[in-house]
Amino acid sequence: MKALWRAAALALAVVTLAVCLAPPALAVLEVGSSGSDVTKVQKKLIQWGYLSGSADGRYGEKTRQAVVAFQRRNGLAADGRVGPATAAAMGVTLSGGSVTAASASIISADHRLLSKLVYAEARGETYKGQVAVAAVVLNRVASASFPNTISGVIYQSGAFSCVSNGSINNTPDSTAIRAALDALNGWDPTGGCLYYYNPKATGDKWIRTRTVKTVIGNHSFAV
Image (cartoon, rainbow, N blue to C red; front, side):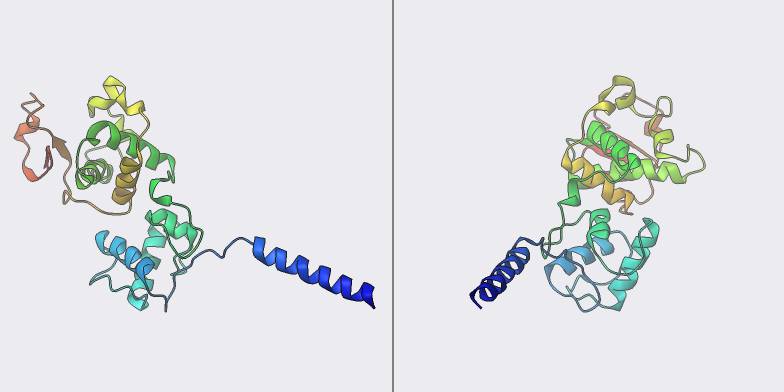
């Protein structure tokens, strides 16, 4: 009898230890969720144009549809739920579970190259200014007047001084990485501009003939 009690106690101890050592469940946001994590996701979706209205912290049908649209654009499983993969693509950290700090993570080769361009060209600018520089690259990719890839645009002859002087090869910081990701996800503070320049630092007469649409930090953004 004592042997049976010892065996039962040992089994219970093993189960208890396994439960204690088990990794925490990953956070997943879905219809019915609420709180600060939902608000963070909604703010991103609003910023990128997937969701209209305000970030109210309640995960309803409109938020689910916006998440599905985001997932489809980014090649993710379009299930309308925000788990680790979708959170990483959004650049948000979910506090309710063990999701890594994806906001400073490289998610693709294009993201890495764009981050390097942002760091080389705009690391002294505001965050919005850094996103704007990345957006110009993406606007060129979408334009028939430029190469149709990020690498083609960045390495186009004479396009960016950071390529000719080698600073494109520097390692980007977390801010540049986040800014590039925000641009890739649809934030364009320039409203479609194809050019930018620092009027205090350039002697290029041609670039000054372009129509300036907005000024962000030290850069004029033009079409």
